[in-house]
Length: 470
Image (cartoon, rainbow, N blue to C red; front, side, top):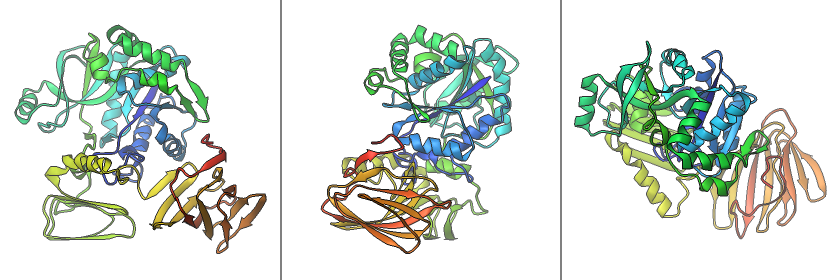
């Protein structure tokens, strides 16, 4: 049985301002109605004989992963939490050790969570064609037939055929310059390096131990610290930090003599920039890709994405990217969007927060949107999912006023527990233990007005929490 392994890391820099550190691109619905992460999971279901996925993600994204899996009706998955990011070789090692516990002969299909595949039928067919190679102890990677001499991807050179569909890997090469990329494509011997793999868990671990023994030993030490926590598997942070940081390409694939590549044409993109998203998006006759309330006059080959309840109008633009969010707007020449990371670096150096989180922040119980704030006040719109409950908590520096807009709230305030219905309100004094619960069958929406000397999110003392944050 094939066990999907979804690698869901990412820093959220290349598609800023829509992508942020706490909500990187794999968790966004960029093309279609579902997120890239969800599309990746759904793609594995089309294989037929595949197990529930193993997801490797950061602790910061654990509840987002769990919620998006739940939306797909996926149950029984293993969500491995990396307390520190150490690149793909250790992440895949932990997933392989997890899979090997249940099946010594498990075959892993390793997929980044943030890739777009337009022709899923061709991709699924390539996986099925690669399966006999994996069963025969090859470490298979999928090479994307190049559509153009791209300089943003690594390349794989094919050697002799080892099956009807696969070739022995002759060489992995780094991202080339434009002249070299053109030569690669013209030769017909090279494919783009997709970062997707198929191999037995046991074979990967054998090759990792052989070629990168330090990574293997450190990863095994980390896996020995595994502790189940709700739907998650946690590992010791101190042990994880000791693991060498390296990619699967450098640690294994470039060193093993059992690397094979199966070429595939499947309209693949790693959505590595706003320009790449424009290329993948549906466009009108003028070459414009619009998402949201957009009016475009005399505008061509332009991408515009605007957020809810915000209209964008353009006049006389060519080859431009415009992206708006409630707290930031990006306007860039389409051929310069690869420099977005420089903006993120400036925000980080200045101690700002626009690269870290959106104004709307997601939590396991729902979300909150910071509508307005001043020196001693903050106003939030809070939405609590049906049946969900916030932690039993207290604040040292702020009081809160809650006004129910819709739904029914059960409020704990000190020793009192009572219900609030639509248009009712209550006051939570500074220093009083309190809790909010949605006891209804529809989302609970309320407005929270905070006032006090300090309004930071770290002014929370949790006494009880169903999500393990107390």
